[in-house]
Image (cartoon, rainbow, N blue to C red; front, top):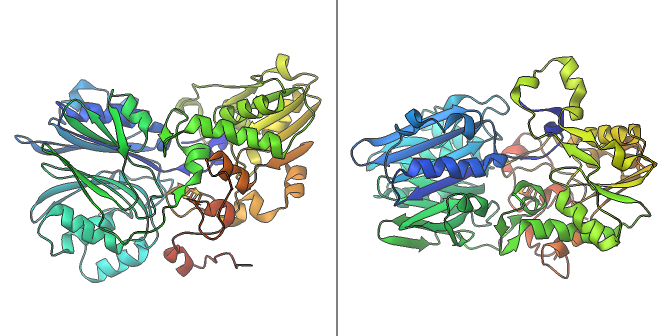
Length: 482
Ligand code: SF4
């Protein structure tokens, strides 16, 4: 269960991790998933393979640290090859995860078993599902990922990797996949490379992970990113690489850099922390203000607040403190507790902000409810002025590529102008970094190339690199070009 604070953030839905060629691979996977916990907190799963025991698996609700840490459980997952997944549901049983939806999904195919873990979202999963059911497939879960398994089962190819290629040529949308057979660890990224996937080396073994921070936790060396449109197959003999799809210009998710990825991860050769710090610097250049203090909305606003402070010369201070230990115990869905809302997680450092003109730096504004409450708390603590600076452009469009977003009419920026949002939040000023400023912070010195954008930025621009066909069938309308 989540707090209202979490409800006002976009949520990455999944993290994937896999390792081959190490003793007790599942233990490495558990550690990797723990490092990727920020990408999904509802549930996690591990599938392992050992020659004697065959395939084994475990799926649990809750945090990895509470589930995959018991020796008795981990002993049931032996072998040198394992993959895992943490999830927050975007497809399937949204907000109401069933254990059958928890990945990795496993299937016995004609040539042996295989398990698949998927980060992303397939935009044609509903139509594929209908087609597959018409042709006799029996679905076990409500996950879009299961389409991949059924497409593999129907493929006439002779090997599992070839069947996986066949299946992935039929799907649309975003996928970074970690899969396994009895002897192979397989990683694939969609042709646009929307979601990340990293390759690492640990001892004689190979690792695949959503982010580099998950390589660090097991002491693996970063080798390289899996390329957009690439499939790699790791075995005891080494790595093979294939490009099974029509090449396309990559469109990596720019929001990974703003918010989803951990600041200690490296993406595209750039430190996520450093990118966020530079976004803060861009913000200070684009939206300066006379103030006494720059304070982050913790934790995700911290690097951008540091950048804003460094660029503007306004002192940085911890004006809001986050309680790291908000657990499930307190988060009962009772009205009284829910009304406490943001106060469960954040508290204002009264001694710091009283009497001061404060610049608050946050990563994004989604519904705006949290921003209103934070402003109220900071004013209650005696601040003289509150200025909001947001380290992303206004979020105006939903994401269909593996991020939980409210419907468009719930996005504050889709329904209000910047001045209306300022009035709604009740702050002295409210400014967002521009899309060009965000691109500059992401090492694109000339900003966004409107003819060939370098990233996916659909939630800001409405420019969807893959048509969200299922959602359009349900009535979603794309932005009308100028
Ligand atoms: S729409 Fe936004 S959150 Fe979704 S993939 Fe694109 S940039 Fe990322």
